[in-house]
Amino acid sequence: MALIATGLATHIANNHFRSGLLLAGFPVLLAALVYTFFSGLAVLAQPPGYALDWQSAGAAGWQSVLRYGHWVMLAAFGWFTIAYFFHGSMMRAATGAQPITRAQLPKIYNMLENLCIAQGVTMPDFEMIDSPALNAYASGINDKTYKIVLTRGIIERLSDDELEAVIAHELTHIINRDVRLLIISVIFVGMIGFLAEAVFRLMVHGRSPVMYGGGKRDNKGGGVVLLLALAVLVVGYVFSILIRFALSRRREYLADAGAVEMTKNPEGMMRALMRISGQDQVKGMPDDVQMMCIENSHRFMGMFATHPPIEARVAAIAQMTATPVPQLGVSLRRGPRRPWDRAPV
Image 1 (cartoon, rainbow, N blue to C red):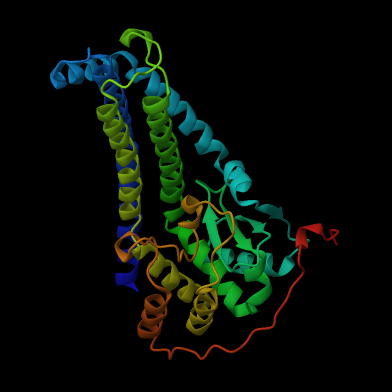
Image 2 (cartoon, helix red, strand yellow; image 1 turned 90 degrees about the vertical axis):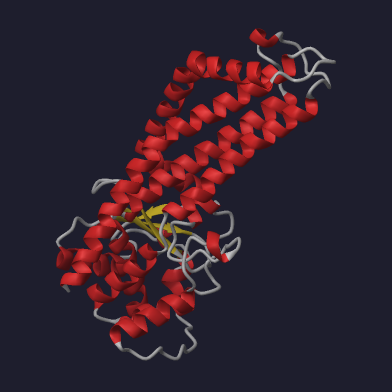
């Protein structure tokens, strides 16, 4: 138990460090995007028929960073502030999640309440996504905003002990402060993706600012500018990949272990994971949110996967608890299709 506690303390400390690193590195990345954008415009403004002057283009890009960088940072800070405080509403709009009350689904609230009392933590709220997929995630940045989001499918098709294990898994993410790092990551990935796409479109289809002569683009230096615009996109998407590396897959193993410790039911956790396997894709859910879920089977090569394979997670639980991997029977459980439409009792 002491080793587990030490491991969790280290994991939580690492999450705080990664969050700080992302916050510190974000202005540097924004400056790189501004530099690349204005350097490309400087190349475009150079007269045709002459060799491209990369040094002057680089100098113009750096001067533009000094001239406009603070406005870009201010706009980004404003967006981050809005997203930080209203991320719940934004994620609800992106996923279609709806708040549910204890009166609508007392069973899951009772499960969560018992787990929270045993752990001595504040009870988060529940939301539900009306999807037949089997998935769940936790979100929030503090006790007032923490919530656990479940799909309709996972409530309908999992048995009570399996569903309790899933809820305990998500509660562990909250206790371990995984969700704060995930929220910051989602905000940054979305912002950088948007900015990179906007810069690319401006460089290829937009107009040059007055400082570079204005007017529509012609074909001079078009190939070079296109390459620079592609470089901006690459910077943005490389940042997204680095975010994935920052989100250690170890967090899922720790959350599985935390759920087993809370419920004292390793078999329930293993059966839940086995039922979720291959059934986790929520139609229309953004990839940035999907990486927050208990399972994300969307992978581009194994090295970029945000989650370890279900088989590895089940094997880890079985080895850790000396419990045989269960045989998965057929579940015909069905619950209310839209529980938030039920009249409060």
